[in-house]
Length: 103
Image (tube, rainbow, N blue to C red; front, side, top):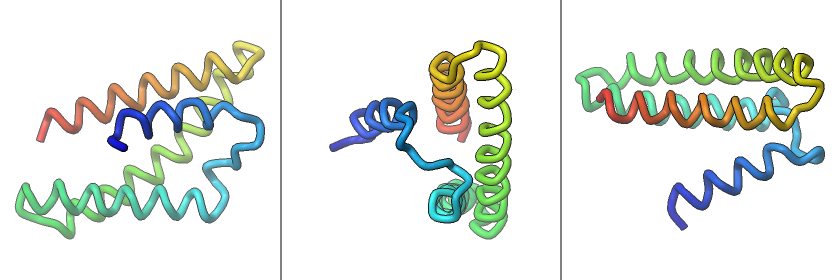
C-alpha cells in the first residue's frame, strides 16, 4: 500500500462523524511526531536535522490548529462540513506538493 491509497482513505475517513478531532492528544501527538520526523529528514538533507525537526514540529502545530480553525470557519460559512473538508484536503495536498518539490 503506497501513499496514494492511504491518502484517499484519509480523505474519506476524515469526513465521517465518528472520526475524532485532530486536537485530541493522540491525534495531535501523532501529527507532531510526523512533522518532526519529516522536518528532520528535510533538514538533514539541507544540513541541519535539528532545525528541520524544530520547524517540522512548529509546522505541525500551526497546521493542526490553523487547519481546524479554518475548516470550522468554512463549515460555518457553507452550512456544511463536507465542502470545507474537501477544500482543506486540496490545500493540504497542494502545500505538501509545494514543499516536496521545493527541496
